Amino acid sequence: MPAPLDFSVRRLDEFTCVKVTGPASLASFVQLIAEIGAQTRRGGDRRVLVDLLDVDGEMKFTDHFQIGQEVAHHLKHLDRLASVVPPDKITRTSEKVALTQGVRLRVFTSMNDAMAWLGEAAEPQGLAAA
Image (cartoon, rainbow, N blue to C red; front, side, top):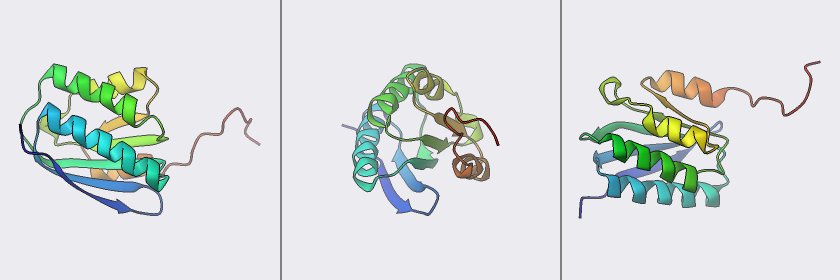
């Protein structure tokens, strides 16, 4: 069995930050997503930033697809979920899969862009602008 990914959680005012390190594998990501889901539900978190800049290794298309499905299953309770990956690792496959299942996941290559998106005010639900 592959080594699990290590992660640490920091709760900030606007969002919760999850720093992930270790070797990439589908099994370790499935385990990680389930654990983040449990922790963010317990903590009442609504917006989460997942820093994947220090995750090593390559993932296949089918792995990214499965990760999107796992995100949709375990992280539906979040208003926004941002992940940050190195520019050479971005595929947007997990993002597309999660979005089609109702989870607002966006993948970024810039920590600043991800934090800005998470910090944006929520869109009013059915209210006309005054």
